Every structure is written in structure tokens, then in C-alpha cells.
Image 1 (tube, rainbow, N blue to C red):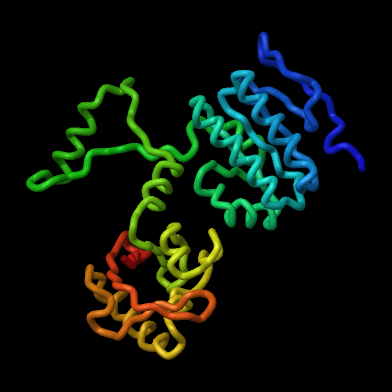
Image 2 (image 1 turned 30 degrees about the vertical axis):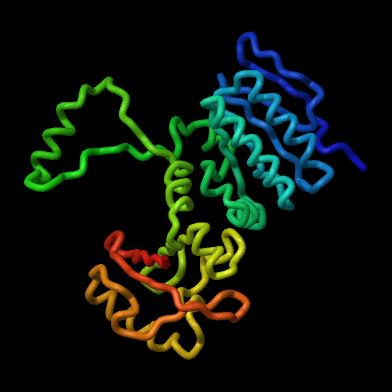
Length: 278
């Protein structure tokens, strides 16, 4: 079998010490290590790749970029290697970024849940240029008696050079997945765009498989027409209410079995709607 990668390792980082026996080529952009992964990644390849990624993080890479723009096939073992690298990076206050172009590779990342943990870019250059991907500033939320103008004044009083707190997609997904209730988010057409782990377990779907499915796939066939009608009414009148208050509701698992979940819906933004099942 031919080696995974044959290109050498090189660096422009002052004082950087990088082992040259890794399977994939590495280049440095300041404190960012860019690893070019091979065209095909399988079980035999993932172990050496994992060890190389972990080794680079041990060499004090502040950002580790997995360049998969040339990768055409990728399996779960490769995803596990990236997950290990993400865990090591998070423990050391570093970042893992992934550059992907092939749809099949992106699908594996989504199915494994990695797209919830790491920032994904269309090119290595975009990953290098990003300063703080996926950070969401925590701005004050107006409370009772606090209008938008007052909230804006509060924001302006923050010193310009004061670090602004932020939460990453990994933190948000950790929170959503830790909920005891199953939560799904649909777009205006009733297509699922988010499902937490509890919802996937309740309905018998593997991680990532619910995304792109119609929300009616979660109810028995005999109730789908009524659910479409109810969903249309909810779009016209988006108020939080128990979903079962106007129509009989049951959940259907992927294997066709059904169960009687409690359910409620709420408006999350001007377009998507979020539902939860306890």
C-alpha cells in the first residue's frame, strides 16, 4: 500500500520543532499548523493521522487546521481521529479548524456531530485568515423596564479594549444536547434544521440523520395531514403553546413504532420554529 502522504514537513514558525515522521505534510502560518490530509482516509490511515495531529498540538500549535480540501473519501474512524484532536485542543486552549470541499466528507462530519464542535471552512486559506471562528458575543439583554436605547447605552459604556465574553458553537451544542427534553428546529417549510441528542434518541435516528427530514416524519402517517394544518396555523400565529392542544399528537420512531410524547412549540426567531418533547 502506498504511504498516506509523501510531502515533507516544513515550518516558518521561529523555534518550532516538528517531528518529520508524520504521514501528512505540515506547514506553519505563525502559530497555526496546517496539516494536509490525504485523498482517502480509512481505518488503516486514521491512527497515524490521529497521532500526528495530537503531536502537533503537543508542539504548542495555537490553531490546528486539518486541510481536507483534497480528501474525497472519509469514514467514521477518520472522524474519531478529528474528535480526539478537538478534545486535546480544547483541553489546551487551542483550536481545531477543518477545511472541506467534498460533500461526502461534510456529510460524515455532520453525521458524527463534529460540525457542532469545530469550525468548518471552504479552504485552508479561509481557515488561516479566521481570527476567532464561531464566537458569539454576549451582549446585554434588555430586562423589565430596560428599553433598546438604554441597553445600547450600556453596551457603549464597555471599554473598547476590554475582552468581550463569548460562547462557542461547541458550548451551545453542549447545552442543547444536555437538555432532558428532545428539541428540534424547523425552517418555514417544516424541514428539520436542528435536532439535539435527546430527540435523536427518542425517535430512533442516528446523529445527524434527522437534519433535512420533514418534521412530519416524526408523526404517524395518519396524523401528518393534521400536523401540516396545525403547523400552517402556527406560522400565522406564532405563540408558545402545547402542540397537542389542537390536534391529537403522537411520535413515530424511524422503525415505525409510535409513542405518545408530551410536546410544546415556541417561536425562536422570525423564521424557524422550535419544538420540544419531554
